[in-house]
Length: 43
Picture 1: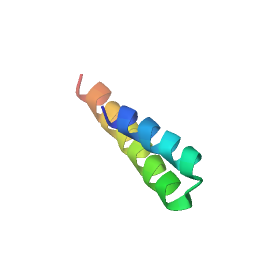
Picture 2: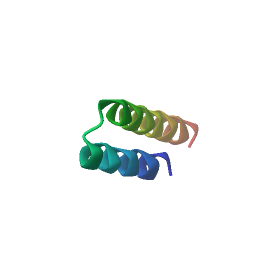
Picture 3: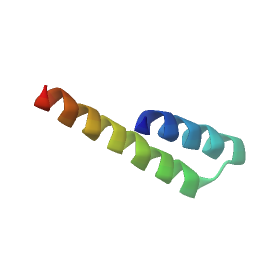
C-alpha cells in the first residue's frame, strides 16, 4: 500500500520536476520497506 503511494508520488515528482515531492516519495518508499520488513519479521 505505502509502496503504491510512494511510486505515485515519485511519478508526480518526475512529471512536475519537483524536488520536495521527490523527497516525500522517497519517504513513502522507505516507510513501505520498513513496514514490509516488520511484517516479514512478525511472520
